[in-house]
Length: 300
Image (tube, rainbow, N blue to C red):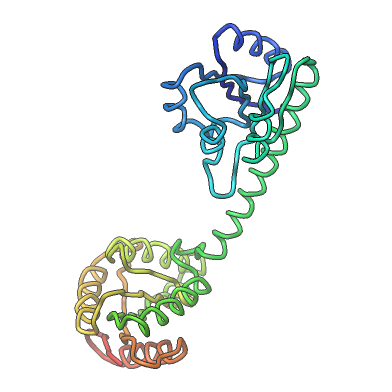
């Protein structure tokens, strides 16, 4: 069984040691916060824990502040259990806890087994949610990232382009597209097999990504074809970037004794464009570029 990691917000060290002794017997590891300074410094470590256990009489943090601490992620929130050891519990604090989404509230008289069981239940629910989120994030990553080139996937790039078209139609910001092709992949596959061809694409994508601007979006479109979305970039600037990429990348060995052979098709957004219009122009430009003997750059 995986050890639970809980953070205890207490009023004094003696109370904390009593709880720690109880939890250690039940395979639960603990850390403490005992004052305002420790509370303010714990935020950077909050992801290490599976649950917050809070003495309802702490004076250094309000219920809202504790809940804010637990909300360390947009989709994940640490469960919070409040312990009230007064003979007459505060109805105000109890109401405030549940208004802010506290998971549980345990009142005196305490039963040690009950406290342990509730902690185990809430922390295990949190761990299940955490595991689910990891799986969802992995699926989302598979949908947005091309696994061979580690660049943006075609599906995600289509969504980005549609958004950029809407943005262009509203603000008329120069936006251009480079559709480029790695031409010598088929030779490599024919001579050395598919695995070498995939390595060629992977290594080329890494070099390509290192030579574009942070604001640009790179996607593997199909096979050994890539699209670069250039925001705030005129058609003249896009041509300059394509020439610069051609000069830099054509001298890089992406496999031993293998350098890229490239062709670039360039187009820019125009009024009334839809996604198909832009892609058709870029594809046509790439086709024309491939026909050229030198340079292999064409604007459509």
